[in-house]
Image (cartoon, helix red, strand yellow):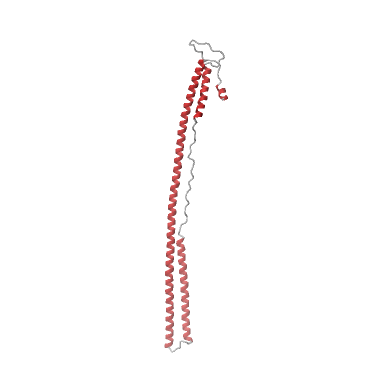
Length: 244
């Protein structure tokens, strides 16, 4: 019996040690694999965030360039319209003044001509000539105003055409959504490793005890060496494991 116990205890110890060392090695390998997986996830996440940041910097640069260009176009349109309106009004005023002078000069020439011919300035002929000259002056002035109105319309059209060159297609910034960088914990706790080693050691000890005849009802006869022969009833290891 003591021999069977010794054999069973030795096999139990060896089984426990072997199981625990195996679990330790597997645990270290799982820890290294999990760490590598986490580093790969973190690196991929860093590269993704770097790409988003780079794209956003380029988007901001492009949007800023568009905003500066739009402001320049607005300033240009305002300047060109202001100058065109000022010079247009000056030209209109000068033309109107010239028409007034020409009308007065023509009227004075008509009166002088009529007086030189001995015709009274209040006569029908003199009044008809003056009326015709005044009507011509009114027609010319109306045409001058229409021309100025067309010029003003062209100035507004040019102003709007310049403003239409602005680009308001600003791009929106990209949003970075953080992903999962955690690792899968495939490690086995120390308590679980000890429990597994204990079960393995107990199973191996019972197998050794059975092989040494520890489950025989009567002590086996001593052999030539003084140790009982290995034998005895077979131990159902599967049934024992299922009972656990």
